[in-house]
Image (cartoon, rainbow, N blue to C red; front, side):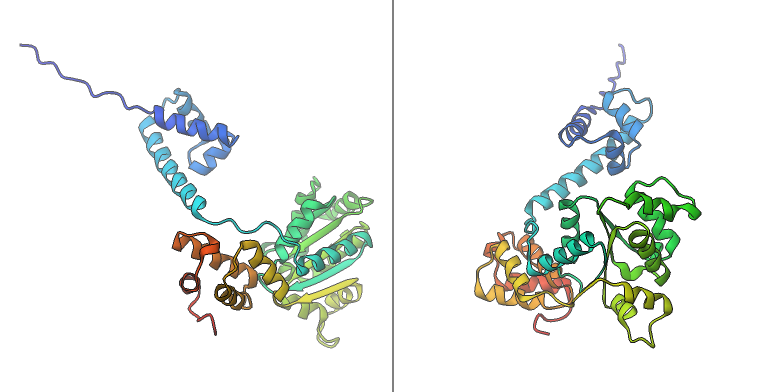
Amino acid sequence: MLDVTKESPAPDYAPVREEVKAIKEAETLSWEALGRESNVAASTLAAFVAGTYKGDNSRVAADLQRWLETRRQRERVTAELPSPPAFLMTPTAHDIFSSLSFAQAAPDFAVLVGGAGIGKTTALDEYRKRGTNVWLLTADPSIAKAANVLSILAEQLGVSERRNAFIARAISAHVRGKNGLVIVDDAQQLEAKAFDQLRTTILDLGGCGIAVFGNESMLTALQGSADRRTQAYAQLHSRVGVRKVQHAARAADICMVLEAWGITAPAVLQVLKQIARKPGALRIMNKVIRLAAFGAGCTVASLTVAHIERAWAQLSSQTIES
């Protein structure tokens, strides 16, 4: 009697391949982009989907299945999360646009100081999108020094020069005659010499407007009493063409955003206005609204005070009234 041993069927990778291929086509992603997201090398991914990969297909399929499940979960959560309102021309945004327009047209040096969450960064990005020859740079501690901030700015502008001795002149030449504006957000991260280098390179030699946005510490450095300002900051202080300071969200801003969310219940509006007057302002208020709607599984318009209070408790140890 013959002993016939049945072979295990070959693994079927077709569903995984088809799903990856469908994502690539639907979202017009490159293999490199898909590789970065899935943490599978682009060449391996392309070969696996094509059915030509010579390595361990079962390992690649397992990695992709984990990634696909994570992606599906993210898409489910995203679908349930309410989308925040589109850009609103609040009174604060209008003032920011006005200051930026002045700095660009003059050209001049604008200094704007704002508390966290008042809509400053959103307004800057919207101005950049709507404008021509507007460049937005966000500072951080790694580019605090003059040489570093010039290197990052050159990259933003598309300037190829990277030699320290020539990079400033190359930037000046690039912006000259374009009636443009360079905006630096989170500028409190920069040292005094970096401020002065930007002012010289962009405004003095490039004839291009410059606007710096930061917090109260930047204002203190730029606008402190004459006996406390360093020489570097003193030079900057005398060159400022327009200065705006706003520490908190305005009542009109808060009302506009709440109206855009479609919230009408008086008690809910009252609680959310209290939250918007806290540090973080509109940003934290929007976070609470999204988290409350997601946690309650309801529309934003249906939110209750209890929903808001539960969401707030997840974000802060303080009471709303404190």
